[in-house]
Image 1 (cartoon, rainbow, N blue to C red):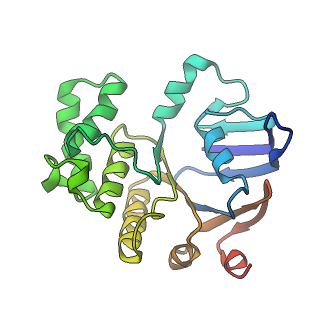
Image 2: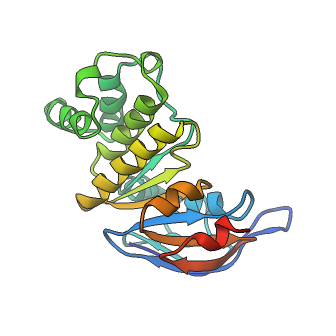
Image 3: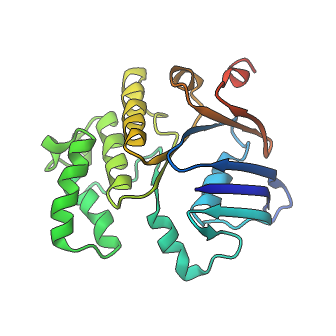
Length: 228
């Protein structure tokens, strides 16, 4: 699914965001990626989605080699990876249904396929009764569920959730994490980037910790970070 081999990423100012990262995430895993601000988490996401290329080393995602991927191949890579952003990035002028359908139209899906797929995904995230609402009529938790539905609708093999609970209260945060676990149980690989170690501790999942551009821990226990 995802493999980083001794990945270095330097920016034009000369600083190294990643300083030799190696890790592997298999099909069907649920993984937390944790670390302080500036540790390199965002760079890892951008490398996975093809927004950046490594300065050196190798990145492999769903059969694509990111260090030599062709520009025309990037959209096909991104169809295999659904991304959920902290700020939701919903279209306020479109309804819940239209926000999700739009993600399918972008890749050329037909109207019949859209009519079949969108209601299924909205039901999966618990928004089937709110398909005609607009984002500003939803709670923060519902908006995050809509963002997850949009990321899921094109049936990606992997979901990356970037600080998915950063703007939510603890109860809604737990709901979102439980939903992501349910999605993982259906076979989708899930990578959650988060600062919220309380949530990490509630779910017995693999935790990859990064700091100053290096993987400093990789396993089933995130307590090292909680105590820093």
